[in-house]
Image (cartoon, rainbow, N blue to C red; front, top):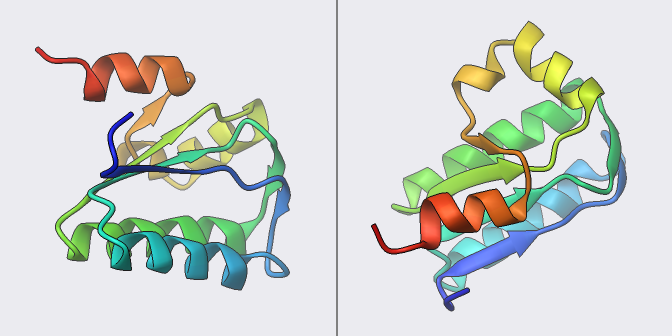
Length: 108
């Protein structure tokens, strides 16, 4: 992957105890020049409303800096949460990191 692509891979439960750290990590990446941010959720077991809010803020942070924001490797709970809140229409989600790399990073 090129230097403008950054991957964030939170672990465990993305809830109010982890959202500040997550948002700070996203801001740091954007400030360091990341143009594409991929949030790989393969190690996330559960996301609550504050975690979902942190993902929305991360999306806005990246987009406001002119970047692109993607998510991959969501589990069933996260998929259902995205569908119930219509976030599946907001976030660009890939099955896994390989699918993201093929779709976004491979030359057309």
